[in-house]
Length: 213
Image 1 (cartoon, one colour):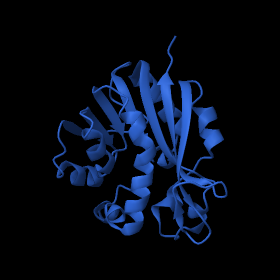
Image 2 (image 1 turned 180 degrees about the vertical axis):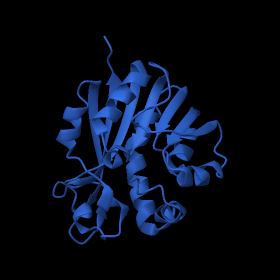
Image 3 (image 1 turned 60 degrees about the horizontal axis):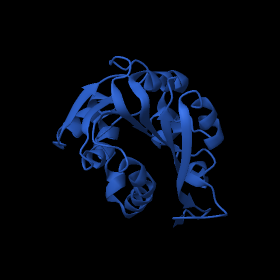
């Protein structure tokens, strides 16, 4: 069952980003994503698991022509109403992406793999549709973070299969060269830090350059 294919969950999803807590986390996440994305020339990109379009709006500011897919019609209904420029939304599964091999120079999936029943299949699909020397951006929640050990039982994260950083890097190693970036450090009392030597990150990004030779 997809926890996001629910009208109430979809309608409340953006509330997180309106909260002080959510705004701080969002800022720290984008601090590590922006240097990566700003180095990619504007092109047609695929965003997988776009949800309500929160990250879609961000990617649009860099001049990409965006195809954004999600399996939840309720999330896409909200995303479509945001009128994000140069963006086409489509219902589609990350495990069966409806595009030909080597269709995109840039593919992004932010907090998607954790909610997929077959993440290895999703990685294979992402590799298939991204061109040689193209960029793949995977943003994921870190299973080691103290944040996720304190989740409310009603949270959608109860449906997530979180990854250790080393685990996902191993799973994605067949794709190409991987650079790792981390952000959002949270202590036992849920205080947020931009950097820490004592606490594991709550969010990490794998910046992958595709190698098909």
